[in-house]
Length: 266
Image (tube, rainbow, N blue to C red; front, side, top):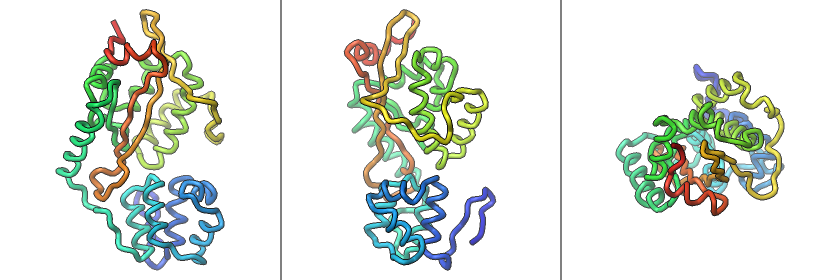
């Protein structure tokens, strides 16, 4: 085994699939049990895979790729170590990326009546619908969703930051495993004390129902919102890897009209 300049191990073919899987699992911050739950198997089977007592199947490789937020190098490592051919393109294609973004904008974002966005793994805004563009305009045209959510301007409107930020914090912990920018931004937020009320080692607390983001506007209007997060179901090109579709959802009738028209700020 050798190490890249950034400290991430590179698994050679001689290390075998078990070592490759174990390394990727550690990079993602998962226990054997957590990995097993994500790919609908048992901890014992994961252990057998990592110790070489069981050999991976093509179906297992498919589940790993579908259920885990693997980077292209991580995915390539697992396929090489397994001996199966990697069906994913490993060379980013700018034209394929542009076509994929245009498809999402035309077929998904334009049909959503509330703000909707396509984000990359660094949370940069790549595409948005008309409502999303108006929302971003109220935030000073910042093009990074993470910086928007952690800005003093946005947090000033959130009346339940302590509760709502817990879900955001645990989402950022997962995202930081895939993005150095998210990791650095999260570290900066921790230094600023934005998450002092959360223990980094505690699991996300269970909640009953949907935890809203409660927003109070300068005119006294109150909104209850959340978001839906999704990805393309099947990707065979590195150009489209890591894209998230974020759809803002009003949780009550009083929040729906302002989100449709985005007359949020004076």
